[in-house]
Every structure is written in structure tokens, then in C-alpha cells.
Amino acid sequence: MVHFSDFDTRGYRMVDVATGYGQWVETYEQTVEDVMDLALLDDLTEPRWPSVRRAADLGCGTGRTAAWLRRNGVAATIDGVDLTPEMLARARARGAHDRLTEGDVRATGLDAGAYDLVIASLIDEHLPELRPFYDEAWRIAEPGAACVVVAFHPHFIMTTGMPTHFTSDTGESVAISTHVHLLSDHITAGLGAGWTLAEMREGVVDERWLAVKPKWERFRHHPVSVAMVWRKGT
Ligand SMILES: C[S@@+](CC[C@H](N)C(=O)[O-])C[C@H]1O[C@@H](n2cnc3c(N)ncnc32)[C@H](O)[C@@H]1O
Image (spheres, helix red, strand yellow):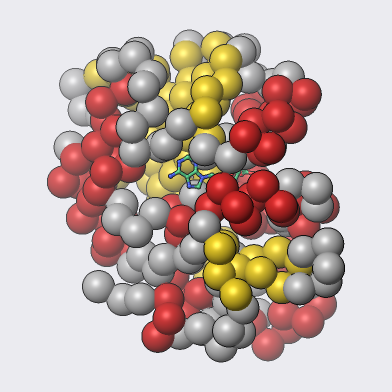
């Protein structure tokens, strides 16, 4: 197992998830780049978004992921779960979800076998272990369901030594509890939970990234995020 502290080049003060996102909420939408996650969703060849009937959006945050689903033809019920009340309040105001619940992605309280899409975007680095997440996704998924995971790429965390972080209202850079998961950690946890990997895409620092982060020229072609589509075989 690898630890973020072995790679940390920033030394930012680190806070827990609810504390961090509770403070980041004010500026979150302006700082998260769509190319990190939404561009990868754009590139996936499955699932067929318009045919989704019931979706669970785990770690739904302010509702960016659900808004993307709505723009891409998902007319289904979307239930969101997140443990940060301030993020959920933004999602509620946005209105892309049908139901929002304060809870943990590892024990959502959602109905078993009820969803044909489980999606979790940009939450994996906050989980010390991946298996409880993949197990819970499996529990709430119906046979044949897809589980779409967008993750912070371990290569990028290791290369930059940069945790997930935000700038506080006093100007301090504050890190939010960050864990490094190798791609093989995802594969092992997903397969172990019963999922079959159907598609995987890695997003690299390219022109789209450099347009919003010119300082990342030195990271050109380095992978920064990854999307995986898992299937619950029938
Ligand atoms: C980077 S945001 C991603 C939000 C949204 N999916 C998006 O793509 O914009 C991470 C979110 O995951 C939530 N989160 C992190 N760990 C969680 C956990 N164990 N259970 C529930 N939510 C969690 C945080 O509260 C935060 O809202």
C-alpha cells in the first residue's frame, strides 16, 4: 500500500472531507476543471446514457455529475449521496437530483439492487480503502447495471506530490484527506466486489488542460484522471 505522505511536496495542512468541502463549497465550482472528469465521461462509449432508468450518484457534491447526466439524456430518477451538508445544499439548489441523502458512499442506505447506473466522480482519493465503495456500489446495483468511476490518477498525485486542496477564505492552501490508489488497487477492489471491467480511459494533460492550466506545460502528456466502466454481469 502506498501513502500520500510519501509523495507530498506541498506540506499543506490536511483536514477531513466534511471540514474541507464544507469550506471549499463557496469556490468549488470555479476551481474544478470539467476536463478532469466531464471530458472523460464525454469519451466513454458506454453506458448508453439515455436508456438509464435509475441512477445513484455517490459523492454527488454540488451536482456537477448529475447536471452532466441530465445534459446527456438521462431522464431517469437520480439519487445523490454525499457526506458534506454544504455540498448537498448546493446540489439541492441546482435541482438535477430527485433525492439527496447525507451519507457515506460506503454505506449509502439506498435500496439494494435498485439502480442500473451507479456513478462516482472524483471521490476515490478521499477513501482510505476502495473495496468498501465497490461492495456498496455492487449492493445497490441491479443485475446488468453499470458502475462508472472517475478517479484522480495515481501517477499525477505521485508526480506532482499534490493533494486535493483548495484556497481558504484567508488565502491558505488547505489539503483534504488524500489517499493514493494504484490503478491495480481499483482493478483488484472492483473485481473482488464482483464487477467486470467494461471500459477504461485515461485523461492526459493536453491542449484542453493547458488552456486552463498553462503552468502544467511540464506535465504535458502525463495522465491526470481515469474513468472506468464496470458491469454487474447477469
Ligand atoms: C471532488 S468532490 C466531487 C463531487 C462531484 N462528484 C463532482 O464531480 O463535482 C468530492 C465529493 O465527495 C464527497 N465525499 C468524499 N468522501 C465521501 C464519502 N466517504 N461518502 C460520501 N461522500 C464523500 C465530498 O463531500 C465531496 O462532495
